Length: 541
Image (tube, rainbow, N blue to C red; front, side):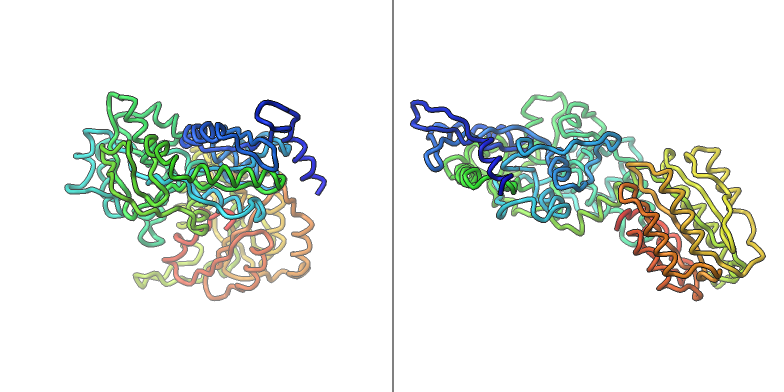
């Protein structure tokens, strides 16, 4: 209660004036940059009506703020983190109550979903949509005819697949605002994944497609550097605003199928005074009043139901017809795409442990009917896996049987390191049936923890076809030692791939769960490459 009382005092200042108010009640509103001018104009209109709460005059202070920056601020305040591609090299100071807005208007409910994943108590009450703007693909005028299949009016998975083929041939690039910071970019990444991945085996294609995307930090910067040979997902409103500036190459909007809309939710941030919350409710009523809809329409926004009004800038592929709202707020989809994108675009730090006990010479029966040694299947998978990592990733390799041996130190994946790893993978198996799985994983975990790199997926990947058989350390002992070694500020996960029928899957699951990793059972050699890729592309899942 003391914190609320302090906050209430902080927003009330003595200011007796002709309005008949003893105090001003300031309400800070952080609005996404694209809708901020609309919110500011409505606030100006509303302030002229001299609104009051308990006799105090309401002073709404609107400022433009990227949703990613507000989300990061709220996350730090809650003692958590959110994946907004922020600079993790410098510590972010805990914000004061005055730094936290009373109201947040991001571009999409996706931000509320993401924030509630960090802090379930971040907001007070339910959100309400102020406006809608479908996400479209912006195509430079003159390129639409050559890029899109004949008769295309919307882009579904099939059409996007065809466009990707055209892009690869014609040198036209796909651009996007960083999906971790921008909902339209995130929607675009989702559409791209759905177009490319029809089965788990297609995840490799997705890696290539994501890495080919030209990324900008904000929509403004994307538009400022827009080239005649780039297409990009963005809001319909943003595209219309760009075309109104009279660019030499206007943009044409191509809607997505199915449609996805930005819904601009109005949400109160928890922890403010009762009077501030009441004032925020009054301002919400003003923003949603029919008498202010003209401000939204002239700025290129649709009503929350997807309809348009007088002054709406139709044309260039933007239809005046109603587009039913489809907000992007499914938490599972958001988490999946962010995980794929982050792992694909960001450098990793991985230490791979390869089981080289005698049992690795046992055969796998391939789909062709040919038998091959388990170690050979593993080698090929590991070699294929090298192609999935960015050049600035760091990889190392250990072999383990009764003990463990470093074959290649964790180092930047330049040409020399790739060659070093490929050569190390060609080594044979050890003359041992004893498997020191526990002590090897524990040593690898500590190695990555001690050399932890912020902003990277720090991961131990284990290939094994058996179970721990070395005496001296039980599973309980291992879990105790792992708990003692854990540093919450340096999270390291362990991903385990159990190959063949001799694996103790319960053992692997127990190890993975202790680190927030995952354990996979590989019974078919055709699965191993896909599972390996899934393990690497889903950090923290």
